[in-house]
Amino acid sequence: METTVNPEDMVEGGRGPLVLEVRCTGCGVTTPLATPWVLMHPEPEDADWDGVSPGRIFTCPSCGAADRYQLTAAAWRTLREENERAQAGEESRVILGAARLWDGTLHRRPTEALAHLRELAARQPPNPEAWRRLGNFCERFELQDEAVAAWTRAVEVGPEEFEAACSLAQHHSSLNTDQDALAASRYFVMALQRFPKVAASLPHREYFAAFLARSLFEFADQSPEPLVLEALWAGGVVGDQVVVNVSSVELQAITLRGGLERFLATAELVGLRLTNNVPEDEVTILHDLIESGGSARRGFIRGAAARPVVASPRQRPNEPCACGSGKKYKKCHGAGAR
Image 1 (cartoon, rainbow, N blue to C red):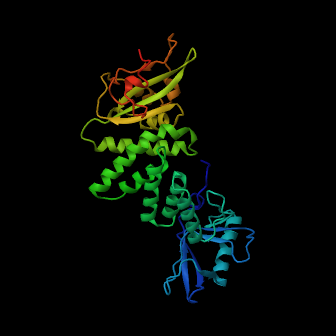
Image 2: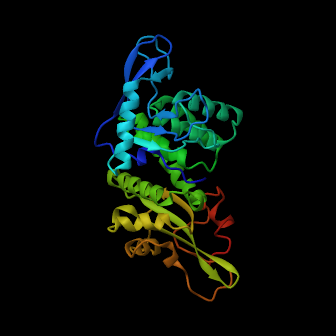
Image 3: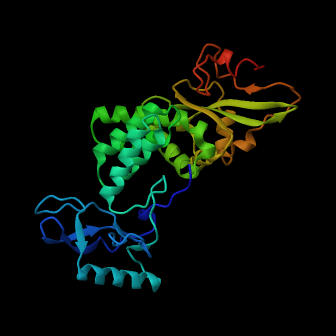
């Protein structure tokens, strides 16, 4: 996945929306369009396009036409003034540049871009990225129901789709019903299990690690019972064999909360899961790592063993392996334990 820059990240919201006067090409009514930002292509090649991509879908209040309008002379004056602010180094809601969708298509009016993203997803039904990108675009333009449907499809067709699971967890947690609370928990657990498999390829790994850590502590603060995080991570090499650590920590016992973010952000993670089984040891390897700074690289096991080592009394032979493979621990990472 390549790194993308969202328009929302490039403008400040202190001045409120930018209001442009537009004229509907369907019925001729002139009306204001309020948008948080505008992307302006410096040299649009298509003579039928004005080069302006607003951050809102415009629906004519008179005839209901969507994104069928022309900018009036007053709108162009407003855009020029905003552009002059940007050139003077002041806060501006106009961004100069070519906006492209994830497949390289030029982003023009939002409804045109949405139609293209819907077509891409329909042509590639097994592709989770196509559904996730559609969901993200729908959320940006306040089509929340379609966004949720697209993200749900993404996690269904993509066993390792992580970002859409995060989006679904955030969406449901923002709603105040018992059903949504259960859905938020389900999608969060899904995201937690999938994160180690995709963390190395995420362009914003630190952001997602912070989201997971914050959510874990929120769950722990609300839980009447101990909530335990089990983690499996690579711990260096002994001879020609990879050393693997398995350990757990009671989330309510963590005092250095930033340490958990740093632990989750490291590339050595192999598996994560939640349990209510409190560790037998008061201070575990994972607890010590998090409280001392959080880097999984500090969790290497040093010894003379020439085979994989799993350092934890926590995993029972018939329990599912913490790596998320679905196999019993004794037939997975427990096979070489000592």
